[in-house]
Length: 612
Image (cartoon, rainbow, N blue to C red; front, side, top):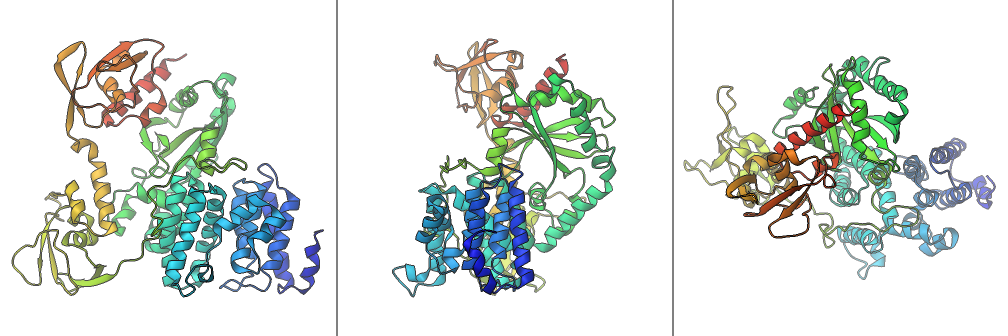
C-alpha cells in the first residue's frame, strides 16, 4: 500500500499474522464491493490506514485486535453493495468514540458526509454532558436520543446502516461478555434499533439482527426451529434443490420460455427462511415441545422465491409470472397457487405455491425499485438520505424501556415462578400457558376459597391457583373468554403480545357488520364487515363488473378510491367502464376481508389461464 501510514506499521502492536489477517480482510471488503458499483480504492485504503493507526494497541474483550471489528462492519455493508463513503465510515465508526480523534479531524481528512455518519453513531460521554457524575444508564439514553435525532431531524440514514452492521458483529461475538451485558445489548437492539430499522425499511439487516436476538435470548427455541427446518430441507433435498428439483426446473422454465414470456424478467432467486420468520408464522399457543411438531410442510413454506421485474416493464408485474404459471402447473411438479399472504415484518405480498410433493414456497414479485427499497430502506440514494417516513412512536425521552422489577409467586404445586411487579392474575395465566390465559376466569389466592377476578394484582409470595376453562383432555374443547377489554387488565409485554396475536387472527370474523346500499336498489340493505373497503364490496357483490368499472359514493360526482373505507348507510353506485379499474395483484393490499381475497385470487387465475 502506498499511503504514508505504512511507516507506522513497523512499530505496530499487531503481530505479523494479525497484520496479514487484517490486510486480507480489507482485500475481502474491496472484492465484495466489486460486485456492485465498484470501490473507491484510494478512499477506502486511506480510511483503513487511518483506523489502523488510531486503533493500534486496542484489543477486543476476546483478545482479537480491535481493528477486526470495523473491518467486519465494513464487510457487512460492502457485501450489500453499498457505496464507498458508507463503507469508509464503517471503517472509521469507532475512531472518535474510542481513540484520540475528533469529528473535525475526520471531516478534514474524509469530508462532511463521512464525518456526519461517524458523528451519528458516536456515543456521548459523561464528560460531554452538563453533569459529569451522570449515571451510565442516563448517558446511554442521551446517546440514543442523539442517534435517533440524527436519523429523524438530520436525515442521517447512513448512520443507521453503520449502527445496524455494528450491532450485528457485536451480537455475533457476544459470547465473551457477561450474560447480564448480553441481555442488555439484546434489549437495546429490540427496543431501539429494530423499530427504527423496520420503520425506515432497512429490512435486509433488521431481519438478520432479529434472528441473532432470538438465538441469544431463546437458544433452545432457536435450535429447535433451525434443526427441524434443516431436517425438512434435507429430507426434501432432491425434490427442491437436487439436479431434478423444483429450483432447477423453475430456472429451466425461464431459460426455454419464449422472448415475449421472458420480457421484463431480471432475476429469480431462492432463499432459505430465517428462524425468526418461521416462528412468527407458527401458532402462538404452543409450547416448545409442540412447536417442533409444527415445523412441517403443512405449516412452514420451505423457501422464499424472489422474482424481480424490470422497472421498464409495461404492465402489471404479476402477469409475467402468470404467463409462466401454466408451465409450472402442467409439469411433473403440478405447482398450484394455494393462496396469498403478506410478510409480517415487511408487509410484502406473496403468492403461496405448492408442488406435487407438498413442498410450499412464498413467491415475492418485485420491481427493481421495490427490491432496492426493501433492501436499502427509504431514501438511501447516493448522498440523498432523506427518509420519507417519521418515527412518531419512538420515545425519545426513554428510548429503551428499562427492565421492570420482578416478584416471586408460588403455584398450586409449590413451584416458584418470577413475574413482573404489578402483574395481574391474567398476566400469570398467560405466562404459564397461553391457552390457559385465553380461557382464564380468575384465581384462588393464598388458600382462599373464593375466586379473585382476573384483574387482581399479585404480591410477592402469593400462592396462586389459576382457574381456567382450558382443558387438556382430548374430548373437551377450550372455552376462550378473551375480549379486547382484557388489554386493560394486562401489565406484561408478553401477555399483551399473545392476546393481540390471538385477537388479530380473529379480527375479521369478530368484526361487527355495517350496512350499505346499492343506488339501484335503495331499499335493500347489504351487510359487509366493518372496515371493508370499496373494493371489498365490489368483489363480494358485483364481480360481474370486473371488466372495468368506477365507483361513486353517496352524492359524489368523483370516483371513489378503491381503498376508501365504507361507512354505515353509504349509497354505492357502480358504473361499468372499460377504462376504469381492472383486477390486478396489488388489489390484495387494499382488501380487508378474506372472502374478497378468495374471489380476487380466482378471478386472476381465470383471466390468465384464458389468455393465449
